Length: 484
Ligand code: ADP
Ligand code: MG
Image (cartoon, rainbow, N blue to C red; front, side, top):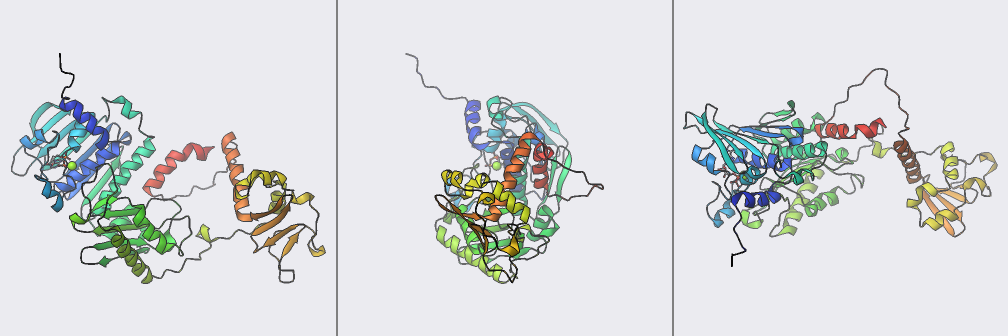
């Protein structure tokens, strides 16, 4: 009988491994950037085209590779960074698994050009399906250039899992941020479809943050430091006034690797909780450094979670560092009504009050106990009116000094200039006016979007808006929605 079990060819094994290591163009960008860092580069360029689907190109000025190494680097488990398992405990490099280039070579076409300082000529390899197709000697500067073309060209099904170009570009941008923030002393540039997005000089961390995210960060960064025997925390948190409604701008690094940690994020959330609105996120770039045996370094390349030996210790030191940072900073919440929309209170107007009445509360049922209760609700307009003579028109405007503190509207009562208590057949309703207004506007806008019937007016004179790069990407993606 013929044996049924066979060893997979290297190419197939690599393609399977690539499924884990390379999930999207951004994974390629991350691996190439990390290799460039490991090679001791001081200047790294990343260019990508078509959201990375046709080209990701990284150029570094690191130590380069000899031609033998250049041929070997695309083999599985080929690495110059560790030799034995105990090396994992003294890791100084970003890579160590020897899997990235093998995986990339299995799912994309590669051109690798490299030269070391000791060689007069460099090596240029073209690679396809994990095989070296051509090799030639080439005149090139010291360092390495890798072009990764047509990612997933031989596994088309993987292409179908990619998100929109805007989303994939944003993932690349995020990888770039992680490297840029964790290595501010390295010059970095980023090009998208031949457009320069960033040209960052070598700098200090706070300068790098400003170069990446804009001048508005200059005065808003609060240093955050803590040292214990085995644990160091350093970096910056944004001032409370700078907290944003959208995520993005939360960066943790453990031993220089970007990680995600909802556990540690909680330490920030808790410290900031009375300083910023509940639905906003504080900005932070924080570095946690601890001995390799205190943290599981053998993390999966595509995963960003880590395991700490003593997670509560990290949490507490971090929380203390943030508290200290905030205490040293003037952190009273900003009351700048012109600029901080979160602080502006909504003052309801009379026409809106009657509109709320007409809505019969059905449009903001999410704030109400049940749909049945909504159906039972009576419109204010038809309810018996007990409005004082001085105030004939049902009004939700602020009661003046001479009025009673409670502004009654028939069987409706307004309290704190914000809530309506209404009588309904099955009991009573408590309505948050602001939430009601938001809900009405939300429903209206949903309908407008559905029918593309929104009205707009062009400005007479164009205004120039300065947008942050990832906001610009978001804007481009949202163009159809905005247009409708
Ligand atoms: P790892 O980084 O885990 O070692 P990779 O597959 O990413 O594995 O790279 C394999 C090897 O190729 C590296 O160990 C390194 O020796 C070499 N290499 C990769 N990229 C570069 C580069 N940009 N400059 C110099 N050497 C490189
Ligand atoms: Mg690597």
